[in-house]
Amino acid sequence: MKLFIRLPLLLLSLFSFLLMPGFSIAQQSQPTDGFRFHQIYLTEPVRSLEDISYDKSDYPINGRLSPDGKRVIISNYREKERVKVKVILENGETKEYIKSPCFIDPVAPAI
Image 1: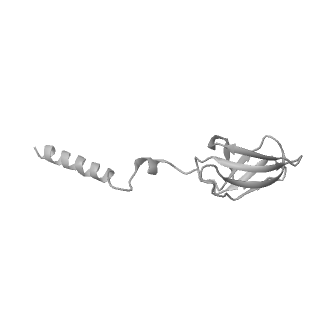
Image 2: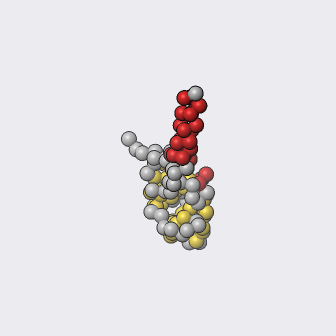
Image 3: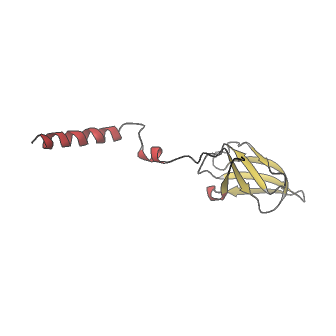
């Protein structure tokens, strides 16, 4: 008899804890990738990086061009956001790339 009373009380308290504001199972089970730098590969070498920002918000991103001009290195990238990159090609043309998170790779720290 006591089990029939305690079990519903236990379940009720568990469900009320899950429904508390700010608590999300998805938030807690979703690990961050832990990488400080990410990179975007470009289809052709470029001369310089003109602008880099998040696609939807236009919020600027800290980034630099690799020495070979084929990659953009981003610091502190927010996961799952598209990035817009404006570059100047070797021939002087301006080109804009928009890269989805699938094409933004983490950079492993050097040992």
